[in-house]
Length: 200
Image (cartoon, rainbow, N blue to C red; front, side, top):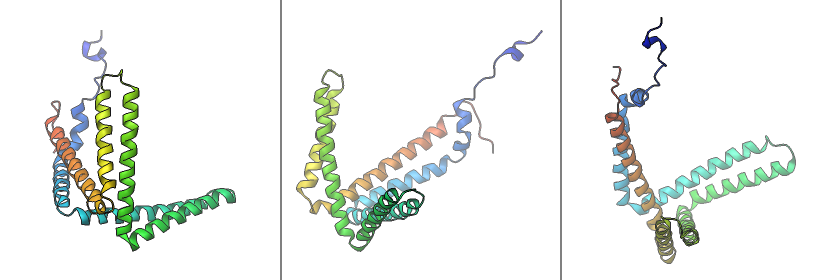
């Protein structure tokens, strides 16, 4: 005759057991979050420099992407497909080179693109919100669309002078939010443990 312990199904692993490896390194996650917050706060004091740095970083990614696309072009069969990939790769390389040669122009171009994107996003959200007014939260969607429209309009109205602060401010705020998220996650990992104990 089997005992109840033998017939009982195995219990699934608790959330705490999955967090054991993370809990051992929660301090590193906390330190990374604090570092991101500090960098974001410092970036708010040097938004012009951070804007140019953002454009250069974008140019570097585009340049590397162009190299990858060029290498990938030779894997495609048919001269039309290969030619298209080569042209795209060369375009990426050209954009990257222009960014390195004149980062201020690249910063102004990216700021103009960001402003146009915010305006387009705001208009789209307003249209969607007013087309779905029967939904309970359509007002919040409309409000977010209005904010995007206003912010995009301010960026475009002050362009190209807005190029000196837009990208840097966005990146600094993003760093601060990412830092707070990392700190919150580290604290949650430390406090949420479901009775498990880290193995030292």
